[in-house]
Image (cartoon, rainbow, N blue to C red; front, side, top):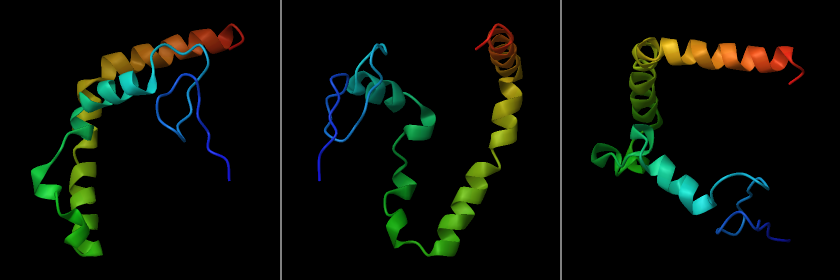
Length: 91
């Protein structure tokens, strides 16, 4: 079995996009700033919970999505419009 290592990454098995800005380490640093990627002490032992308990936690987190989306609707609409404009020009 061969290992994939890319010049734009610093982690074996990870792949990067040639010409993409940043390295794998920089991407990890950016991800670390997202609240969705933050350490949650209350979930430190999630592996000890039952499947139903984990599903309840996931369902509770999913319930927060509509409010988060509503907060960012102007930015989401702008991203959609920008994408549609580029697609209309051929991609």
